[in-house]
Image 1 (cartoon, rainbow, N blue to C red):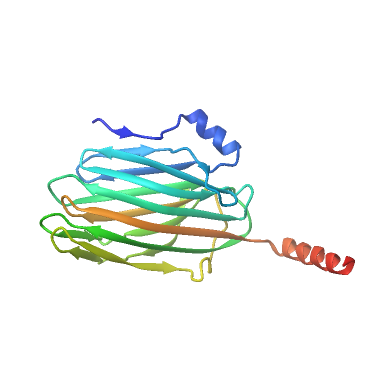
Image 2 (image 1 turned 120 degrees about the vertical axis):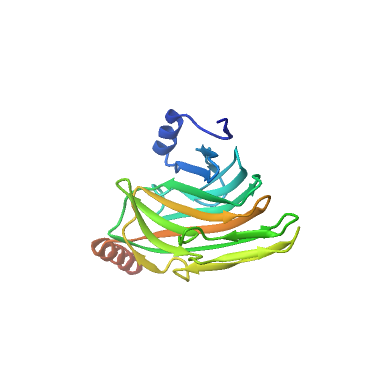
Length: 240
C-alpha cells in the first residue's frame, strides 16, 4: 500500500529536536478500509513563548487529511499544550471508522498536575448528506498523559452514543465540549513523557470533517518548591 507522508523526519532528526527542547510530535491516521499513514512533522517557532507549530498532510487509501498543530517546550515551561486544527475527508465510497493519534513529547516533572481540554468542529456532507459519530461505544475524543510508555486516560469528550448529521452538500456544527474549565482546572497525575490525544469516529462516504482541539497540562509544584518560591517573594518585598 502506497502512503504519501509529508513533513516526515528521520529518527536522528527526532532525537536532535528532543535534545533542543523542541517537542517531538507524531500524527497517525488509520481507516477501517486499511489505509494508514504517520507523520513526524518539523516544529517551528510559533511566535508565542516556548510554543512550536507543526503542519502536514497525510493521504492513503480511503482518506486525505491535514493538520496545523501546536505544542510547547516543557524543558522551558511547566505547562504542556497540545492542540490546533485537524481535517479529514473520507474518500471511500462507504462509511468508515477513523482512528487519529496525536502526541507530543514532554519532560517529566512535578508530583501532580492540573488539566483541561476542549473540542469542537464542523461536518460537511456530500450529495447524500453527512454523518459524523461515535464507533463501537467508544468516546470520540480522549486525552492522555503518557508515562513510561503507558497512556493514562485523563478525560473523554463526545461520549457514545454521539452523532451529528448534515443535509446534502451542507455544513453542520459539532458543538464544543470541554473539561477542566477554566482550563486547566482538573487535578490529575504528574506530567509524564508525553501528552496525547486519540480520536475514534465514523465519517460518511465523501464527507469532510474539520476539528479544533486543545489539551493542557499544568505542573503543580511540590510543597517544598512552593515554600521556596514564597520565601523568594518575601525577600524581594523586604528589599524593596
